[in-house]
Length: 260
Image (cartoon, rainbow, N blue to C red; front, side, top):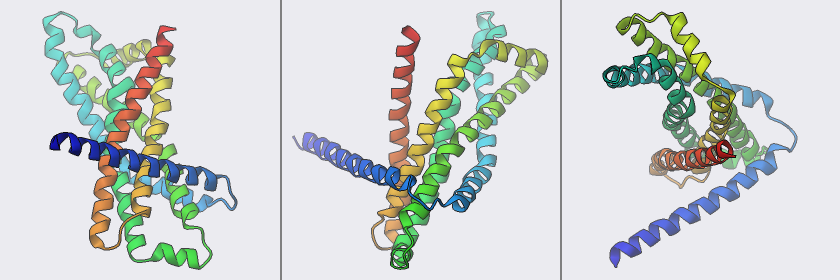
């Protein structure tokens, strides 16, 4: 019985957290369309999120392409289907592996950073000072960061996918003496808009979730230095769970459209 009560309490706290997050998202949408628009801060956040995450995403994508090809190649060789490697790798990376892995990496890199930054501002009463001085902290701090993650995560995912496919092509060029031109011709012959569009659309939701949870955890951070660490840590955990939920919904909806 104790285990059941614990599960119920965990589920209850998760639903309460989800409700508070939904209310916070409503405030975000309300403030987004109000003037003045903090365009300069939005551009600064886009540069901060995109530029500083580019190297990590590139390394991650390259390693994904290398490892995925090296692990899959022996199995395809046993079945005499190694010529299908470009098709298999491109579809797997574009549809699923690239978006979700890149989003998880960005959740750890960007989500925790936003949570810690806003959390420290809350603890040191900088957000309270902005409210007293007449500046809308929700619009200046939260709206710009959520919009920046929403628009930059898809770009990072596309870049990471390209690097991953290049890593796979490099393995095939070394192991199987397949030219880069032949490899990428097979990749582009395989990919269709039905693969690219759903995978790209869901990355906007990934970026929105990363920015929303990071801002929510940091903006509502509890007092004390321990609260900053807790906000950064819980932002990563909650975002990761939310990303898997969004990914499941996206795949489910996409399969419905494929079967129509």
